[in-house]
Image: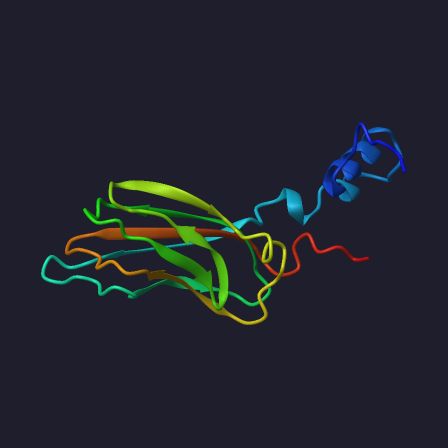
Length: 157
């Protein structure tokens, strides 16, 4: 076994090989990974001033297509005045936990290790299920989930 000192990722290797003349052209370097293929789904919900969202309520924020691989999400919210928490999921797969939304803010939620890089097997809703707190009237929550579409960056080996 060797102690590695310098390594190249898949795409960095493509670039390196092209730069030192080991490939036939830019097609070996410019792959779909380098184009506009990180996509996102954005949605938001504003609780009406005359309503609240019950504890254990489910916000649905769009839908991802089959084969998508979730990278991370950003949840942004208005001040809730209570320590609202929740679980963010794509279908039945947990992306991660949303911690206290007492004060207005945003949270970046990285996909849990168990799910990252794993394509979803069917079209799936993005949901935020609150825990034991009632979301107050006039609260707003938005969610954006960044993902790689089916087939992008999938190794042929």
